[in-house]
Length: 332
Ligand code: HPA
Ligand SMILES: [Zn+2]
Image (cartoon, rainbow, N blue to C red; front, top):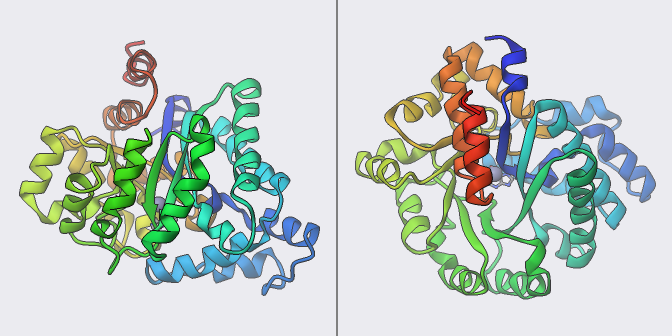
C-alpha cells in the first residue's frame, strides 16, 4: 500500500498516553532544563533501554522517564511535539490520556500538569486545525482512595476533561476495584473508558462493561478468547482502541503478523488503530497503519474502515463524526 494513501486518510487517535510521547531527545532537554540527572549517558542509551518483556517492564521505565516533567512549560512542550506529529500523520482529532497520579505522587500539582497540556491543545486547535479531548486516567496499581482524590482535583476543570480512564499494571488489578470511583465520575459527567484485555483475561472486559459502564475498551485484544464476549462487542458496536506496535513490544503478540486486529475488523468489531506510547513502542499513527499493510496485508478498504471506526468511536459531536467517517470512507 502506498504511504501517501495512509498519509491522506483522515484519522482520529483514541488511545494515546501523553507521557508516552516523551522522545529521548526531549527527555534529555527537560532533564537539563530542570537539573535532573538521568541514568543514561545519551539518547542512544535511552533507546537501548527500551527492550521490554511485558507491560510491567515498560511501566517501570515509563514512570521513571516522566520524572523530567516538572513545569507547565514542560507539559506544554511534550504535548505540542505530539500534536506536530499528528499534523504530519493527518491525525485530525485526538483524545489524549494523561496520568495525573504519576505527577501528583512526586509533588507536581494537578493544575500545573493540566495547564501545560490544555494550552497546547488549545494552540493546536487554532494553529494546526487539530481538535482534541482530554481523558484523565487512574493508575490501577494505586489505591481507590488515591483515585478519589484525583477525581476531586479534576472537578473544577470538568470543562476541559471529557472522561476518565483506567491504566497501568492490569493483572491483579481488576476493574471491579474501581467500581465506586467510576460511579462517582459518571455522576459528575465524565465519560468512562478503561484498559482491559491487554494482559488481563476476558473477565476484566466484562467487568469494565458491566461495572464501570465504559463507552470504549482500551486494547481488548484478549476478547477473542471468549466467543460470547466477541459477539456482544460486535452487536453493541463497542469500540476497542487497539495498539498494534504496543502489543508487539509488550509481547501480547509475538509479531505483528500474529496480531488479531484485522480478523476482528472483518468479524464486524469496531476496532481502531492507535499508537499508545509511541516514543517507547517505535512509531506513531501512520507507522502503525504501515505495519499492518506490510505484515498483515491490510487492504485500502480495511484501512478506510479502521479510520472510519476511529471517528465513529470518538467523542466528537454526531454531525462531525458522520462527516469525517464519510471522508475516511472516500464518500465525503
Ligand atoms: O498500554 C498500557 N497499558 C497499561 N498502562 C499503560 N500506561 C501507558 N500505556 C499503557
Ligand atoms: Zn494504553
